[in-house]
Image (cartoon, rainbow, N blue to C red; front, side, top):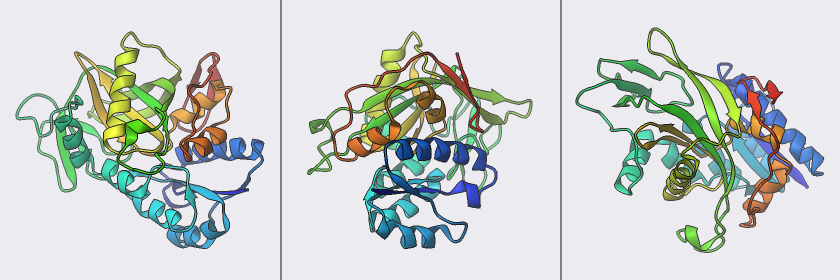
Length: 296
């Protein structure tokens, strides 16, 4: 069987291409070990490449910055079986303000939007990762928004969410998501208040692990995510959900170094509503944004 792995940044966004190449390498190796023929787009127009290649593939997955993911996933879904999140949910997750409002209205703890006082974090409305994220006293600029700064420990939860067969609204009638790992994020703030992401360590087992996982599962379910999903949280007085990424994240580089199962098999099974109940991890791994992994 043939699978299209459509990674955007390698040919089109050099600022993120290191992470993109690392994720693509991990996925390509796993699918090949599982007996799949892997096809990747050329360096031309990304949309045209997907439209050209996808009809000849049995399945596919788009890996792209949040604000572009929905558009390219839509094109993929018109031509082949999607292994990732649906395009509508990807669009909702990319709408940072709207998604936070939905989570807040449904009981998920999120940082306060546009706080009247205290430290603020300014974020791009169409941001990806830590790009353009900073602590600032002023007002957000065009295409930016402000939220409450939470001083705490940064984690993410990597999930693979089973596709619901039949009623797309009946999430809890399907199998629960498989929790791959809780990951500790290496996020640094420089003297100018700018955030940068440097990778992390996985798996980790913080004191409030069960609470962290529960918050991530609830947030991803409310936003309709399917397939691989990474939920970023900050643990302080509460567990704050700060972002829901409806796509492959860099944490997968470290997870696959410790996981006995093949991520390719998990993604394919979950896309049919049949993901495993659990995965098995051995040891821990530190990973950076260029795919370097150190086992511990």
